[in-house]
Image 1 (tube, rainbow, N blue to C red):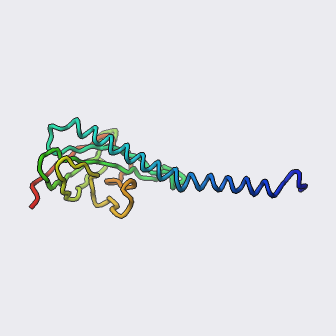
Image 2: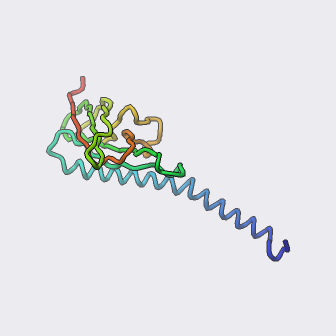
Length: 163
């Protein structure tokens, strides 16, 4: 090819700019987006549990979403569900919850027990189950996964004073 049609210097500059753009998106924008999404989840959980101050312990389903950034197709990706729990009492409590997740047709998808969690007064935390990956960063954590989106849920709550 003639140099006027294909200038190697301009191609290298264009390729460098494209690589720099991908670097910015993958290393900076995506992690910041996850942090912003987690902060929004906490704000939504605070709003939902604040409206339920009459109860001793409040539970809120904040999100039931697929993590599709790393895969090419979302069809086989499970839904990651984030539940938050808040202690509205004036004393520290040990809490355990049994959650029954239902789809849009009110069919049971999963019944899961949470870990026994110690909550201080007015503390808001992600509801932890055996599926919660504690080693991952806080903004990548979820309570558990299901094959379909959770439309509604039922829960049974047990709490007591810590021993």
